[in-house]
Length: 517
Figure 1: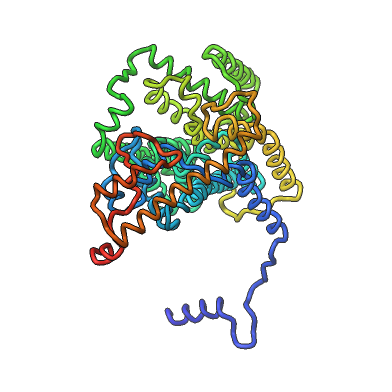
Figure 2: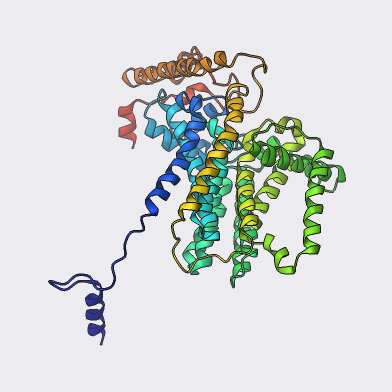
């Protein structure tokens, strides 16, 4: 019986001599090639939006701290569990180490780190597009969601500063977790659920925003009608809690010192009110006005009035609509999107907001990169309404009309965001703190980009020569530090805790390394 079954299976899938494969032939749908081309164009469009920065990527401040801890394997082993500015990021340090090994030299590092930051952006774009396309069953909606994240200037500061690209790495992990949860919802594969739990536990070690990953996944599953979703939601939340407990055990004192958590008291009504006000302002300033290409400053009262107007309009619609129409706002996309926005901003303003205040945090644009993911998911979920996920069949290519609409949306978004991208590049130096007067000639500022990047690469090349000299004629560690301290590397911090420029240079000759290993 078993032999006959095996012969039957072989006969079904292997053609006999002189015969072709059995069954109808599947023709390639010719709508896929233009869809793939448009998707690749959307993925690469941010390179054109931020082209002055990528033509001469520049390292600054905390970049040198992470390089001093992650470039060399010995430093990576010692510094992986040492937090910086309250962030315990061993996975980001591992990425830095791998990119530095691929670069081969310090002079080539700026360009390689720039491409690593872009890879994080592209991975997050692909993850957001996949989640939206799978949840709605529309590939064109997935392309629009990719554009909504990648062509917005909101995640720009996280892309232009390598240290801030931790936010993009975290976003890629969170979207991969949601994709794994969608696969589990579709197929019921426990491997996919295990992968989602693993990613939820790993996200905090990319950046502190990753502590919210488990709660985001739990919110997504609570909006899912699948049997066992709530048990899986508990497992995801527990994974984040255990990751937080591990991080606190390894570096709790250092994290508490840098974030001043000991002074936080949520029983203080004034503290809670400030957290809510700041979160409300950030939603309107960053996720609404910045996505429209506008730089707007609000007061807590103005943000409250705007939110109250939107809430009132929704309540009026709720009382007029039927129950089914009201529930259209509650689906996995809206649940996950709202959780990402609310929980991340609450986390930021309950820690950083205590010591820095919103007036300072307004300028730290990389804190808005992960909430931007939530904004895109929430808008896609509201637009989709109570659609049934098309898990039981493969995705179909979009119609010419749908593809045209997605491309038109991406082009419109690019046109709207280009002026603000230029302001970020030339008025805010790729970050968010103003470095030039509004009346300053922009051409003069543009010339500074290639000049300072060239100066930085020249200084890093001198460090490469010192490292090669150390391989040929080794000197003591103190003598090496004295040589390195005489260099002026543009962008390097003069003094930061846990950082020394000499840590970028390998103190051991290559021959001794081969013997030791």
